[in-house]
Image (cartoon, rainbow, N blue to C red):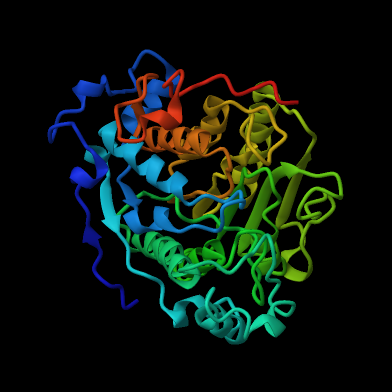
Length: 390
């Protein structure tokens, strides 16, 4: 496949890692006990986990008023490292995706525009904005092409790692930008790293299941694979016909060979932990038993949490993580990705908690000390009260 050797990145002072090597007890880090069925399952399943991160990814800035804040990635990585979870994963600094790799899905005209446009020359290229859906939701910002290459490269490398058989679960919180289309960006998403990763997985695995727990419908991924029976897409999202992206009705089921290979679960405002997790487990049990996927891609958009800046659900971090825990139990090769999430302190908490779930670790509720402590006050807890918005 022409894979490039990945570089292992060890924690350094940049990440304010205070724990000594090989010692997770300082944070009270424990693995699931054998006192429950769930604990026994976790004891018997110890997946090899790969974690993809680039410090630079958290430094990009969409704009002062823009809700997408890549800095959430920096907060997440600091919590992951200071909880000591890096000791239970292989941590990689992935390469950037090449233009050729990105054009395996996206059109050459669009990618050429994405490469060329900058804040400095955007006035000269403004006539192209309507063609490529550039506007308030998809602004031109410094480093936009670099950012797209970084998060896409991580998803591609993670997929290749799964294909090689050298990992069981791969995590890329930078990825999961599920709205981008073949010819244009869409709402914060410029390159669809999920589609690129699935294309890599399809080179080896016969059937791929894509699961999306972002509050917004995974329209870009569904559209890309709407006519194939090799990829099943399953999205749990708010739907009323008006809420972005306006797609994801229950009767959107695929077409041609792909008919009945798109599953949509439209939900209403304010859904709570019990309703969501019961519905998720019921649907996913049937999907897994029927489709029997060779690998699973799980998009973990955190805007489905309660009190999200753009969200309207009432999920706790524990309930969101329960979906990750449930999919982990199947023991199928799993690619875990980020996505939406616009209350950054809760996004970081959520993805840290879910990193612990993937590793089979129980994290203490008190957050570890990092240089970003002020983001998590006044409770400094991994599980704050975040219900009650609706």
